[in-house]
Length: 273
Ligand code: AMP
Ligand code: MN
Ligand code: MN
Ligand code: MN
Image (cartoon, rainbow, N blue to C red; front, side, top):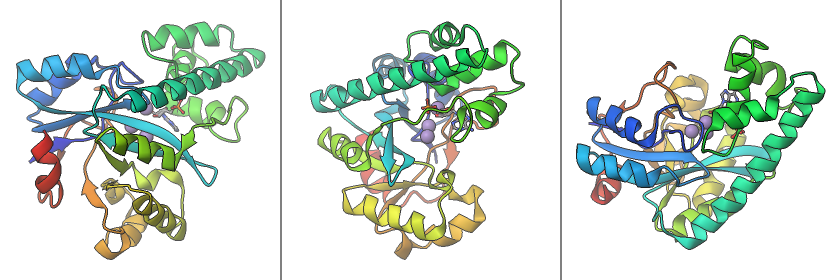
């Protein structure tokens, strides 16, 4: 079956509106979809309306940025109650942090000579809170860098001149507020944190201990890491989930992941959809 439990819309740094994203999911025969924008549930209302019309099973989701041992770790929350006051309050605080950080990044860029960085990011974010992806887009559009990846590599990543660290919430806070809102907490794209096998295993076991439910299946892209987390005894009982992290139809990653054997998922999540 084809599912997707991790993707983005214009409510954060995705390119498609929630409605257009759900339409794309329907066209591509995605049977179960979770919309998981960065630190916001703002896209869910529109996505729900589209999902009803287009007959797509939709779960409300969110991708929360957290800090664990000084590293930025992303937690996807699936099947949360989008009206939960606790979760909405925690996400509002996080969006304040995002706004402050993006403003600080833009200020640095302006000092470095990239004029209009803040106004440019705000414009590209439209109704979303600006993040580094919108700042990168401004840098591409204004001809300062050739690609968004170039903007990250030269300016926006840790160690680069316009990098500002973020004081995201802790891993525990994210797992707790997702779980209290009735959702399942999933460790997103474990291969992308630059962790070695041992550190990754500490993260996985701690994530399970604090109430994490799932582990996103994207390790296949990184054979070295799949060796250390593909065995069931190395994943502390976490359920394997699948998500593309789709942001844009122009990028190489497409919406929808074909899953042969959704063990655990079928028994649990599919019931919620
Ligand atoms: P932020 O949440 O403001 O830290 O921005 C991070 C977002 O930028 C990610 O969710 C990606 O969508 C996007 N991005 C694109 N390229 C990179 C990269 N090389 N490193 C980090 N984020 C990237
Ligand atoms: Mn993103
Ligand atoms: Mn992420
Ligand atoms: Mn994502």
